[in-house]
Image (cartoon, rainbow, N blue to C red; front, side, top):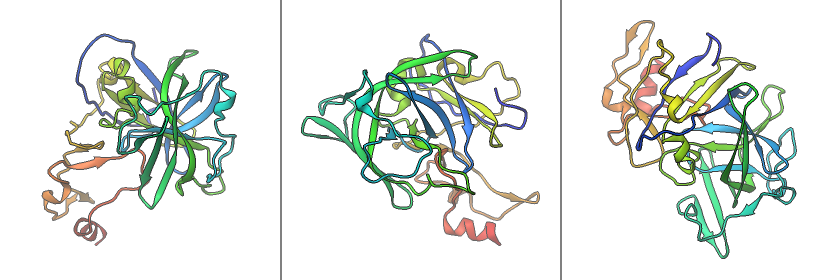
Length: 282
């Protein structure tokens, strides 16, 4: 678990409850502000730091075959060098719109992000090996993921003279079947919780399954997650205070289609609609 300086946020969303092996990943913070898990792809394993993203579903990594690439400090994943890699066929049950689509024999993907950012490529299946938060313990699990050939991700750029170490995204949205959360639902039970390290160099944890409830942490404060018909997780935000004074903002402005305020661990920014932002700024 993280140090006392760690900010703790609990997000749980559950469907079926059954006994399975809990699963915990180590969470680190990058200089740009992203939170990521270090994973190893294929056989032999190759390192890839993936941004933990509650705001999207698909999992993807930039491949060294990329035509349009962002800079990264290490070589991208090369599927030709992995003995366990195989392309995802177009008829695979995970190959469903919107982000994924069948294309002839194989499954392709096209994901857009805020700021005209995007990644496009094809989907494959291979082993993901995780350094879990349990000392000297690793988990190797078969995961379907995108291999980015055309990638325009300005957020994955050098930051304050620190080179980019992000290779892709670990999507844990709750709708698209390609989400890490849904793919491994037998393990995750559609539950997760995470601790966010406050400083670079600190480590925290991303819990799946039984451990997501954090019952052994008595002082953890939690907020209920509101359901929706999209991949986002929402909380019921009621107001904003500045220097101890509650600002005169209609609480209805903190709701999108009655869903509340979206939590997006894959975004570097907090954003409000104009009427809210104007009052906060003033």
